[in-house]
Structure formats: C-alpha cells, structure tokens
Amino acid sequence: MQVDVERQGGSLGPVPDRFLTSSEQILAASDRPDAPLTCGFLVQFEGKLDAARLRHAMREVSRRHRMMRAALYGARQYAWRFGTEPPAGSVGLVEDGSSGWDVHEKMVSGRFDLHAHPPLRIALVRGPDGDQLSLVAHHLAVDGMGLTAILSDIIAEYRLTEVATVTDGPVETHVGLPAGVPPAAKAAVAGWTAFARRSGRHITPMGTGRDTGYGYQPLTLPVPGRVLLGSGRRITVNDLLMAATHLTIDRWNRQRGGESGTLRIRMPISLGNAAEVGGNNTGQALVVTEPTDRADLARLAARVVDQTEHAKQAAAAPPIAGVAGKVGMTAAELIPGPWRVPLLRWGVRAARPLITPAAAVSNIGSLSSLASDEPKISSVYFTATVGMPQGLLICVAGYGNNIHVTFGYHRHLFGREAASAFANLFRTAFGELTRIGSAM
Image (cartoon, rainbow, N blue to C red):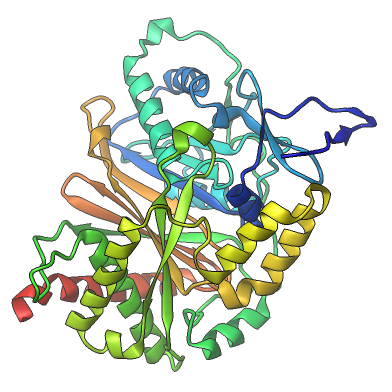
C-alpha cells in the first residue's frame, strides 16, 4: 500500500508500525463522538483485589499485547504506532461508592482520543460485595476475542504476582476514572425516533429524551438442556439467543404500535487471523426473518439454524455484511489514501439509516477458564456498543452454569425502565424457544 508519511508540527513524523486494514478503515469511519465503538468486560470478584498487583499485572501484559499501548498516527490516513510502555494513569481506582455498572457506562460512553490515549481503559471499582474490574477497549483496536485474551492474561498474571515482588513502574493507579475519559458527547437525533418507528426494520425507541451515552441491562439465564428441531437438528445456545432476539423485537414493536417487517440481526464471527494482524478481526453475518417466520416458533428456529449453519461454513465472513460491506470494502481499497477517511465517513453517515440492522448478538462463548479460588470470580459480563438507529447490541458470555446476557443500548433508544422491560420480554422468548422440542 502506498501511503504518504504525515507531517506533524511541521516536521516529518516517524514511520507508523502498521497501516489500518480495510475493515479497520470502515470501523474508523463509523466511529462517532456521541457513539464510540467499544467492547469490554465487567468482572465481579467475591473479595478485594490488590491495586499494586493489578498495576504490575497490567505492565507485564502490556508487553505481550502491543494494542494495549497503541496510538493512532496521522490526520488524513490512519495507521498504528506502538509505544514501548503503557502511559501513566491507565488504571483507575474508584472508591467513591459508585457501582461497577455506572463506572462501566461512563467508560464506554466517553469519546476515545486514540491519538493521545491508549485504546484500553481499566478501572478497579471498590464495592461492599467485592471488587469489580471494568475493562473497556475501542473496537478499532481490539475485538471481543482479542480482549478476552487480554483479560485472561491480566488475571493469570495477577495470580502469579507476589506482593513482595511488586515494584513501581510506568503503569500508575489513577484515583477515579483512568486518564482520558471525557463526559458523554451530546447528540441531537430526534429524527431517529420517527424513522425507526415507521421503518419496520428497527426497534421502536422508548428513550428518555436527550440523555446521551450508553446504558447496560444485565440478565442471567440458566444454560438450557439439549433442544432439537423436528428434523433432529440441534438448536445451539447461540441459535436460541438469535431467535429470541428476533422474537423479542417483533413483540416489542407490536406492543408499542410500531411496525415489525423484515428483521436483520447481525452476528459477529471471528476471522481467525488475530495472531497475524492484531486489532479488529471480526467478520459479520446477517440472520434475516420475516413476520411469517416469527409467527411460529418452530419455523423461526429452523430459519435461524439454516442461516447460522451456512455462516459458520463460509470460508470467511465479511467485515461488514451485505451489499454495504461489499461497497465499503471496495471503497477502502480503491479510494486514494488522503481522501479515504473523509469519504468513507461521509458514506457511512449517509447510508447508516438504510444499512444498519435491527440489532446484533455477540456471543463470546464460555469463560470458565477464568475460574479460580484466588481471586474468586462470581460473574463475567461481556459488553459492546452500537449507535442509533440500531442502538442495541446483545452481548453474551458463559460462566459457570449460567449465561450472562448484557443489553448494551444507546440512551436515545431505551431508558432504564424500557431496557428492563425489553430484557424481561427477551427472557420469556428465550424460555419459550428452549421448550420448542417438547412442544413438537
């Protein structure tokens, strides 16, 4: 790829370490100050963590994961540069009585300045029922699988670290939120409500006015038993989650006087090349249903299974599914470097109402490998974000005998009460689908 070296401060800047891939360029164009693209984890511990040991573990793990100390380079065409040490203030310590979810929401809602601050934010939250660890990454730098590896390494390194061996280093514990977390940006999106209500392809919004940023609604479900279609094919947990999402949106819209036509739910798929490239390596598939599918549970489940099986058999999932993905990838390859970012950003902004699906379901799988007696983890929630008019990303992580579901919503879509009502509707739909075998 031929790229001009950017000039910074009137002088020639250093050569970047890696140029952004085509899929990363599309993600960079999709990022907005009022709706940053993130993924993260909220980990609940049964006891207290030692801040010094956590700081030491962060320093050691950052040496193995260069994206933890990455920075964007360039004003017109972005590339990654990798520092030798993580910056000061990258670990926050919150002891003011705030809940882990409140801290996590602030961490994901504030815009990332990837030129000045690292793409990962980490906060240790002291709580009466045990400490919570909030780990948030910008999705441009790390996808869910990559962040899972980082989380696993941090916890493993913490367990190996003896208090006596901890020495001061460049990773400092910052009182309060980590450095570089601004308040959520305000956005005027009044038009989204009318558009989403009438389109039939999005969730009917039940927002709380002009509140900004993201919120989370956690839900714990038991791992279901084996569920089969009438043909004998197995319905996986992921299929059940996907079908429940279609069914819940359909019922939500109808109960609130909205339309529910063709629904498209995005399903992220790992491309499996994280070791080669680093950064974001997530492809996508769309699972589509019609009102006639959602009127019959068995038909809905079969339609979902057909599409997820096909997606898993594909050689490689596109970074952006559908026609929009093909156009975006072509543009990212053909548009000259100096013009690529502004033109992609303009194209994404103009096409967003027409190309965004109704929601997305991201299942990170089982995290049972994190289990240990010291420090003992009671729950792990995976999180991610998406802006309007979609506004909802349902994230799933298995831990112990439970499925931890997190409804990550933009506050122009839901308020807290609306998000809770949507989660309860989802719980009912999921339960009905798990009993589909016995009903046939």
